[in-house]
Image (cartoon, rainbow, N blue to C red):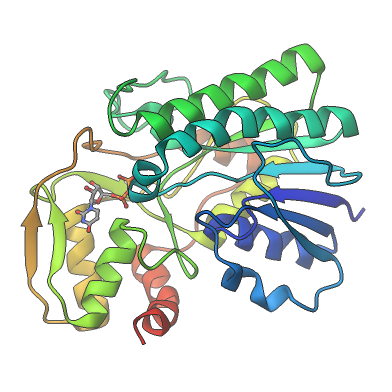
Length: 311
Ligand code: UDP
């Protein structure tokens, strides 16, 4: 049955794709975004959609979206460059913002899904990362504003489940890319694609041997929507388990774009995780989910978007 669904961070990369899928299912969506890192262009195609409305608001201040059946909490700066710039805001949205949206779910007897992150694992000592791993996080380093905000959010979500019986879900999201990824957010896929398309040198931080596992956005949203409909309350990793070194990833971008740009090596940022790969056994068994789109195909599907960003 169609529902009325609140999506915070609706103008962001993941939030906007989530809104599209929820609307396509026939639901009514109330989006909230303060546009600190979100982009109205991500929602421009919904201008004449009568089942969608956007409230421009910072969720750190309590608000009433009207009656809702479900809350997806996706509001937060998410790229290392953005959360370094907006450190205190990131801590606030992952604490006060999360508590405010949990209150909305409690008052409405609504379901709740929080966008958590592989950063909860920090620079992981076990590989691949399973949900039962508690993580290896520097609580005072440059990434701590994001990592600890997300870890606090997980504690808050579990508390609302335990003490207020809210039907909550936690997704731990691994690196994701696709159209609408901010072209200038400093992330590896956006940087490499933009650099290759501009014919500029591709920047690799460190020696490029650190790894990430890249999930195409449509696969990720599919997993998240499945989780929201499940009865699972403990964290579930959603990500693509195929692991790439950053250097391999740069070569893939060069091969795809046909760019002859050179690769330059820059200093590795502090606390940059050396490896990251999700164990998706839980997503497979609980949700019947696994990603379908390999990196090359996902980059191909993103090419037109990044080309438009360059123009
Ligand atoms: N990175 C890089 N060149 C860039 C941007 C990022 O080599 O132009 C590296 C970064 O140091 C990290 C990985 O790519 O090891 C992924 O970085 P990103 O900012 O995309 O997100 P993270 O996974 O670190 O949160």
